[in-house]
Image (cartoon, rainbow, N blue to C red):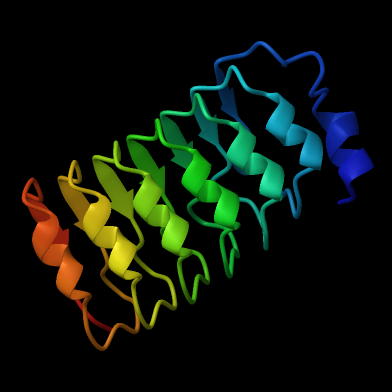
Length: 164
């Protein structure tokens, strides 16, 4: 589906002032760069689509508190994800992520981070900056070791590490 098809199905201009959007299970393969204009959003659900990448403009959604990208085909995240500093919940499970950008460490308000069922082989040291984190799901990845900085996550109450 092309960006024009997405914009035809979803009139982004008409929903510009929305605070919560659910675009789950719409068979989206890409997002238009104009998604970054939806700066009033506090919750965005893009789960269960076929997204393989995100536009850098996703980082403009600085009011977001919850972002669900689970169940897509993402292999990486844009550096701009680190601009989403108000996020408290980030769902990235069931993708094809092989790494995370260092900027993920900027998300210091995160309480829950779901990274299960990906292809992660390592984690950035900056993950240790997420000191508000209480839940971290890492199960079913290809991790051989964990960064020393995870010891900084003193509020962590649930850590899921089960291997394949």
